[in-house]
Image (tube, rainbow, N blue to C red; front, side, top):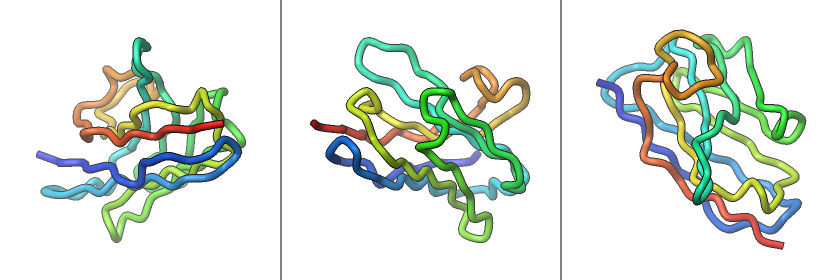
Length: 123
């Protein structure tokens, strides 16, 4: 069993930046693709970005492309999400997840999840 714990969420002004971390424990996540999803109140959980096990390939939702950057440090068993030029509509609980196979863009393709960290963007 792999346990994922997100951290780094908080309150930030629109236009600002924030970096989220997802630390894995219990098992290594090396060679597993990882993704970030987010869920706002009253909304479905949506894909944000994903990264291959090696870190060589990345994928982004159109809504965050050019603003967010996913990266990983396998030596530290950690995945990161750097968020820049934040908008009010980025406000959500952000989750990291381990990929099991299939399309990176859907929640059903992931078999383990963190508890989430709240990101609130204010004007």
